[in-house]
Each structure stands twice: as structure tokens, then as C-alpha cells.
Amino acid sequence: MMDDRHEPAPPALRVSDSDRDKALAVLAAALAEGRLDPPEHETRAQRALQARTTAELAALTADLPTLAPTRADRNRTDLHDWLTEWRYWLGGAVILSAVWAARCAQRGELTRYWPVTPLAVWAAVLIALAIWPRGSDGTED
Image (tube, rainbow, N blue to C red):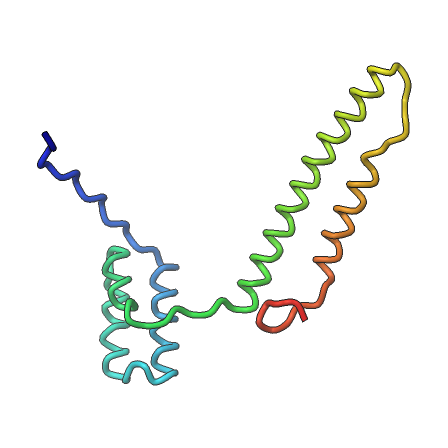
């Protein structure tokens, strides 16, 4: 037999100043594009400033398109992704070096450091990604 009780709804999340700023930016862009007239923009902006939960804030911008990420946002994301790849590279370097060292210990002599080839290729790709020109829309030219 199924339980007829419902689980309690999760508590509403309180909004931060940053959340309000983002909502106000969406409203300002909608006003500039003609999606909102000035009186409606003023009403929604006032409600955004008074909103206490994310649900209240989301209701004010639900019928408006979201803002496209800015160039600075894309650059920040690209840098974060690139640094993450370098951390993967470092992890790969540690693992490959451990395999090389174990093999050297097994043979009882130092052999050629073969991990240099895959690590150099991987590093070259990461460097190329950093210097490759990007278009204004974030795609490669």
C-alpha cells in the first residue's frame, strides 16, 4: 500500500545581492530591447529589489530571454577549463612517471624517460588552445 503523505517541500532559497543584480540586468536588457515598457520595468525592478526568495525573483524574469554571457564571462570560463586541463595533465604526469619509475625499479636501472613524449604532445595541445584565436561569439575562427 502506498503512503499518501507527501514529503515536505524544500525550503525556499533566499536571494543574494548578486541574484538581484542578475535579475535587474535581465530586466534592463528587456527594457532596452522593447520587451518591457517603462512602467512594467519599474514595477518588476521594484519587486526584484524586494524579493526574498529565488522563486519570487525567477517569476519576474520567467517570460524574458536570459542574457548571453559576456566576453568576460566566456574568458573566465575558458581560463577555468584550461587550468582544469592542466591539472589533468599534472595528474597524468604523476601516473606516467610512477609507471616509468616502477619499471626502472623492476629492471634495476634507469631507462629512457618515455613519458616525455605523451606529456609533450598533451602540453602542446593545451598551449595551442591557449593561443588559438577565438571569434567574438566564442567559436574558433
